[in-house]
Length: 447
Image (cartoon, rainbow, N blue to C red; front, top):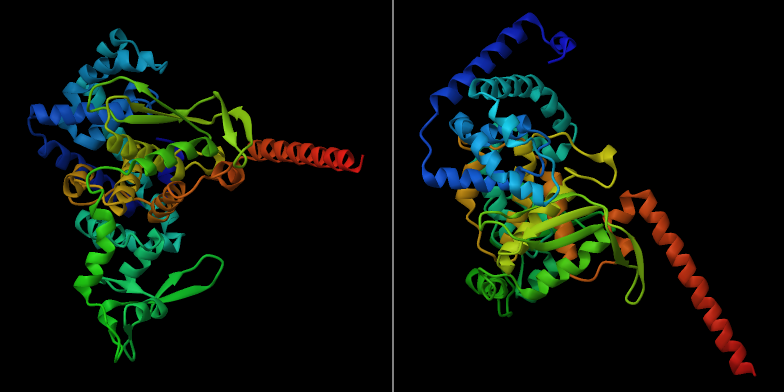
């Protein structure tokens, strides 16, 4: 703690703060339960996910206790040492097992107490930053930070796969429980029209102001038309997803992988690890080719490496890549370091996993939603997260799944001035070469 951190609190606020810290620590002590073998396996799986994001054993131990509670404290050293060889093969610096042996459990608990102390002290400041963005207000209201309410929002956005993620959230905010929402023109194709005084659901449109949609419950059959009923619509819109439920369409996976270089990402899927290991993303410099158009490429240095377990199925690989891209697109990493967000490791993992969960849900892939949320909200409240970043990340990944993305259309080009200059320079050279070639052909035709 810094001395001047206390200056922002009045005497009354400080007493309340001390009480909140004491209550939080008492609650953590009271919830210590013996860990089962399954709990320990889950802990190892989480440790594999975070090991490349932690810079020290202290940060690793705090992250493990923040996620799994104080019961994991006696196991932190053993798990860390298990991962030492894995990290060593990936050239990730870790403290040697001998140094870690010298750290006591009481010292690790002191680290975590200090972490809790700092986290609570800065919680209000963090909420204030989130409140400056109107998109976050709903999730700072107490009931929306409950895991059950957040799950409802995720399920809603996931179900409306034909709407942009952000628009799906806007619909959920305006009409919870909506089933099918379309424009008046679209409803006409289904033999229906908005009822008089129907509720207009406002959504956003690319390069336009807003668009009004109407829920099925606010429509009625058009006289003389073959009107579609709700069950028929459900069959129509779900049929495409049912065909791939449980496994990824290989075309989607291939398109996603082919577009990674345009985002400065080098993919390595040769890493062999246990089945519980997913992958990681980290800054990385390696020469690679980035497409400028259908035929031309520019050779430059990658910015990030995504490493995935070679043992994973194609669906698991898809989920892992989406999770790691979630870290990048939620600005846990960034092309511009000034845009990186300051979050706890648990908050970063929660946002990235939510991104991956939503992308998979919207493509009809199975997701263990209750178990997933429960691990991040053992006491029923999710970490503070940015729904704006989560939904923007989902939108960007879905864009990567549609068509080839060339260098000048990627976020890397937008946010990295050096890469932008490389692309523009290469494009100018190509244009000059093309012009010379055309002039040469013209002269040859003349003679």
